[in-house]
Structures are given as structure tokens and as C-alpha cells.
Picture 1: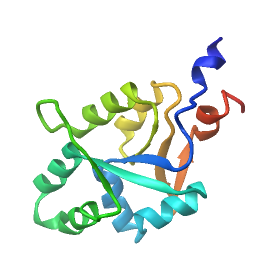
Picture 2 (picture 1 turned 30 degrees about the horizontal axis):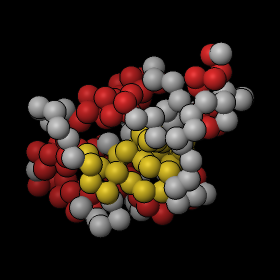
Picture 3 (picture 1 turned 90 degrees about the vertical axis):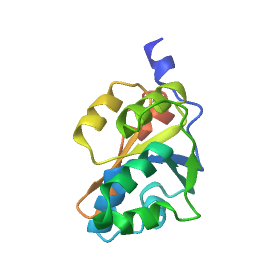
Length: 146
């Protein structure tokens, strides 16, 4: 029965990818186009999602991160409104993913990755050696198969 709960039927192409603040910053640093690199990683259509908290965090970072803010305002990115108080993006992403397990979380934040690994059936996208990698996608979509 444990395998049954790991099976995530909500996850499938077109993938919905929740993006964290530092994922955009690292993408710029590695000169990666976010949407195209997701396509290369997953071989399927992806819709990048940005929450209001992530946008607020990018705006707070100020002048040095204006390129990241311009990328986040790209019309290909979907905006997700937040209803909670405060603008701490990590808590927002963890809460959203635990309520709706239809997202892949894109982050390079070690603490956020550790928190998301505790939620079964949620894959994590990150940047390794100048390209996007994904962890836990097979177990999320194929019922815990190795």
C-alpha cells in the first residue's frame, strides 16, 4: 500500500513547474533559457509557474536582480496568486506543493530541497553542470518503480 500513495496521477505532460527565486538567478548565471532548458530536460511541454511571493522576493532583491525580474515577467510564465500573509517564498512553495501534488519544484536552495524531499511524490528540478536535472520524477509518476 505504501507504493500506492507514492503513485502520483496528477503529474504528467504538460508539466507544471513551480520556480523558486534562486533558480532564476542560477539560470542567468549559467546562461540558460528557462523554458527551453526545461524542454531539453523533460522532453515534454512545460508551463513555468511563479507565485506572488517569488515575485515579491525578486523585487526586494533590488537593482542587481532586475534581469531575473524581467525573466519572471515573461508572458510564457504563469502567475499564481498567494492568499497568505508574509512573503516568505519557501514556506509558500512547500504549502502549495503539499496541497496540490501536480507540480515539479525548480530550486537550487539546499534547505528547500530538503523540505520538499519529505513530501512524497514531488519531483525536484535543479541545475547541475550547466544544465537542468530532475530528481524523483520516475518514482512520482510510475508508482515507486526504481
